[in-house]
Image 1 (cartoon, rainbow, N blue to C red):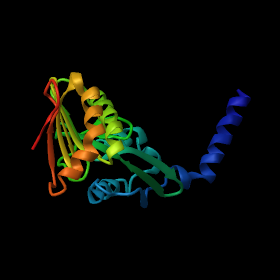
Image 2: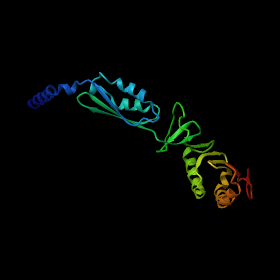
Image 3: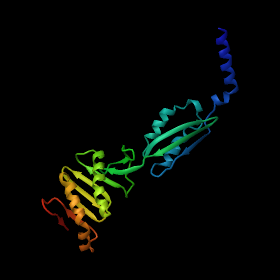
Image 4: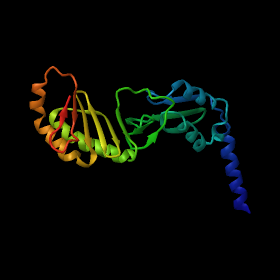
Length: 216
């Protein structure tokens, strides 16, 4: 009983001498992060709603989740800084490609949806039957061949057994089931072909023929 009484006295003393910390209202919210695509104004307005609330009444986990529902926000972190301040840190998604013209895929290979598609110069991948992970691996495979001729893929579409590969200078049509051997063969003769077609800005190559290919 004496121990319980002493404990109550100690707790009461701590509260009395630190009551300002226990009852502090939020007077300031500092926001950290780079805002490239996310709406900084919307995030700021949402953060302002904390002002005037008790510092220790904030459900940090709930509000973290709410900020992460906002477009382009990958991660949020809310930290209490006594006596009267919160710090909100925002991390945006870093997109690496656009999938099926409808959603982005970030650098951790997770999809995320945005109200619009503002990035023009980004890799575009699409397929009607494969996952974005497998098509991205396919892109890396084909790109490894095209590096030998200094061509970079900006768009790749796989529809059933048909591949449409786009670079700045080339459009390549090839069957998925035959692409390694066909693209390797094309890469081997491309320098000679390019020298003969110097005035062509864009070369369209159809590799679907059993032997050889068509160029237009």
